[in-house]
Length: 244
Image (cartoon, rainbow, N blue to C red; front, side, top):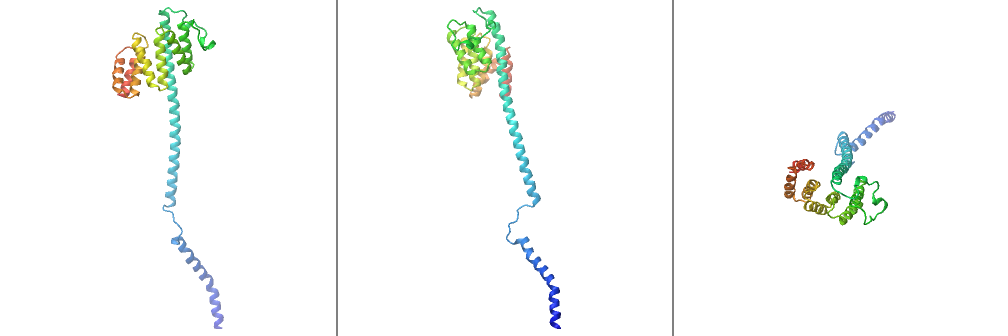
């Protein structure tokens, strides 16, 4: 009878003991059983991840803005060149009317360059200059440089020689060949002191001085330009205000 009571007691107590064993076995694993625990709570990890994602999105946005600004800068440079060419067209028209030349550029319907890469020796100065100017207007800078040099080799003191000097300097400046740009602008100012392009050449020469580190020369020349009454005077004053 006693044995039967003990057996019944064991059977009744067994589930309770098993539950306790499971609790005892499982609790150490959650506290310090050797399993690595994260250094931050789950909410903190989530915040860090969100911040990283936000920073990545900001970098992507800034990269897009930078690309857009680079594109706008290229457009502004092109616009500046177009504006200079428009001004040159007006000046050249006035020079053509005042100076006797064989054929005026405005009356030429087709550039000699379009029909013959090597212009004939009989080509007029106006035709040579217009051929070079057309190439510049078409953004063929290398071709324009060759054509302007050809114009100067045949007519070094011609009616459009100062303009050819200026555009050769301007193209060199766009290509960041500052020593060459300096040479063309300096020759224009020295050899054609009364040419309409002189103020523009002085303005760009001042910028070349500035870009090559000769800031004292740049300030002196730009200050001289700023005292004049040309369009270049206003641009020189703005450059001085922005950079000195």
